Amino acid sequence: MKLFHKILAVACLSSVAVIPGLAHAEDVPPAIQAFLDNLQRQTSAKPSYESLKVDGANATITNLTLTKDAKGDDPALSVKTAEVGFTGIADQGNALWQVGKATFTNTSVEIKGKDAALTASIPNASAEGWYIRATPASPTPKDELLATLTFANKMSSGPITINASGQTLKIDSIDTSWSGDPATGLGKFSLKVSNLAVPETTLAFFDTANMWKQMGYSGLNFDITTDGDLTQSGDNLAYSFNLTLGARDVGALSLKAAVNNLPVSAYAQMLKDQMAGKGIDFAAMAPQLQGVEVQGGSIRFDDASITAKMLPLVAAMQGMDPKVLLASIPPTVQLAFVQFQNEALTKQAVDAVTKFLADPKSLMLSVKPATPIKVSEIMALDPAKPSDAVTRLGVTVTANE
Image (cartoon, rainbow, N blue to C red; front, side, top):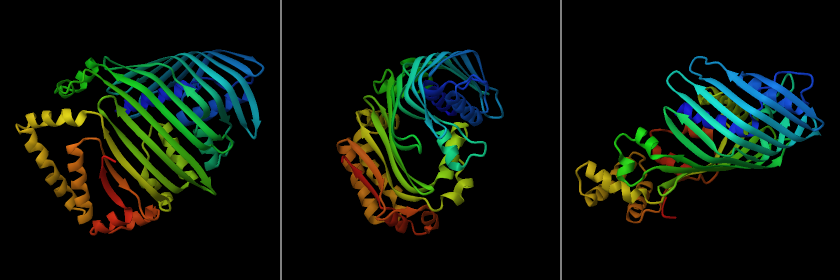
C-alpha cells in the first residue's frame, strides 16, 4: 500500500511538474531552474535531459529523466518524459514566475521496492497558470512552505495506466484547481481522481475469498475528491479540508476537519516529509503543535447499496439468519460505547445505527467542540474520565441526515 500510494503521488506530480530532470545550466530559464532546484532538493534525485530549446518566453525540454536510487526502505524511482513544453513564462517579481501553460508528453514512472515494483504511463498532461518560486540559499520556514507547494490555476494528468504485480489499474484523469495569492500560497484548492478502475482480475487477486464477486461486483470504480482552504494570520495557518473516497454502486467515505493556529514551520515540515516519501513524525513535532486549535471534524459513510448486499453474506458466513445478525448489531454497538461512560452518546450511537440498518443512507461521527480546543488541552484530558472528553469535544453520532 505504501508503494501504491507513492506511485499515485508521483503520477500527480508528473502530470503537473515532471520537469525535474534538468541539470544546472546557464541557458535554463530562471523560472524552470527555480522549480528544478526546489524539486531536486526535496527528492534528492539526479536529473538529466537530452536537449533544451529556449525561444523567448517559451521552452522545450526533450527526453527528460529523473532518477533516484533505492536507499534503505525507500524504493528506486525513475521518471521519464519525452517532451516538456512551456509557453508564456512571465516574471512576476520577487523571485516568482508564472508559466502560462506547460505540457508533458509520454511520461513513464517506475518504482522498484524490495518486494514490489510499479510502473505508470501518462501520455499527455498539462498545467495552466502555474506559479513557480525560487528558494533562497538560507530559506525560512515560509520559503520552504512556498517551495514545497504547487500553485496552478488548472492541472490535468489525462489518462493514467498503472501496472503492479501483473495487475493493471487505470485512471481517467487527476485534475486540480487552485485560486488564491501566488505570493503567499494562500487560497482554495480542489483535486479529483476520476474513475480509478479496478478490473475483475485485479479485484480477484486481492479478494481471495471472492466476497466482492458474491455481492455482485465484477470490478470497482473509485472517485476521489478533496478540497481545502488555507489562510494565514501572522506565523500561523488556518486549514480546512474535505476528502471523499467513493466507490460507484458501493458507497462513499468522507472526512472533514478544520484547525487554527498551525505554525507555518510545522506545516512546511509535514509537506516536506510527505514529498520525501516519509511519514509525519507527530511525536517529534509535538512541541510545535501544542497550540494548534481543533475547530471540528467528522467521518461519514454514505451507502449506495453495499450494506444490503453485505449483511446477508456476513450472516451466511457465520451461519446466522440475517434478521438475527441485524438484531445483534445494536447491542454490540452499545457494549462498544459503554467504555466512554457517557449515556447520552451511547444512546445516540445505538439509535443512529438502528436507524441506519433499517434504511441504509448515511452514518456520521462528528466532533464539534463548543469552542475550539487546543492540542495541549486534548493531551491533558483525563483518560480515566472519558465522558468529560466526549462532552468537551462535542462528539455526536447521527444517521440518515
